[in-house]
Length: 59
Image 1 (cartoon, rainbow, N blue to C red):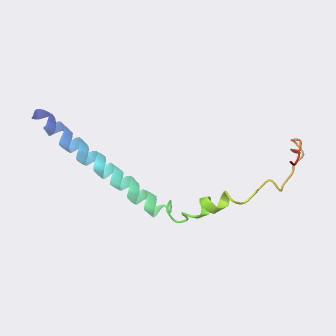
Image 2 (image 1 turned 60 degrees about the vertical axis):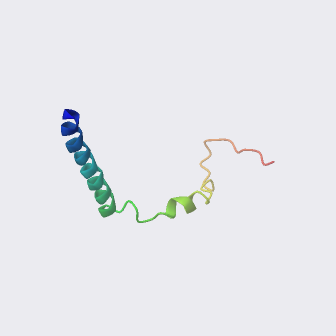
Image 3 (image 1 turned 120 degrees about the horizontal axis):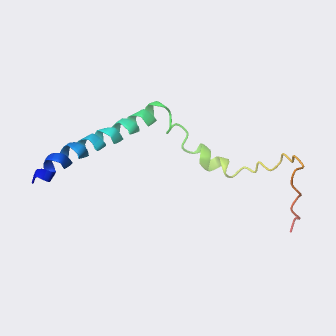
């Protein structure tokens, strides 16, 4: 029973800490562009050839 006297405040503190981190991430714009990273994977950025590596043979 005495363990609850420690666990309840710790759980409340961690919950408030998580809520604060979530609200900070909302304010700083972490969730503004949800589809950008998903669409960026589809585009091929290998068009710029710097000449440091040999070209792969096309199959």
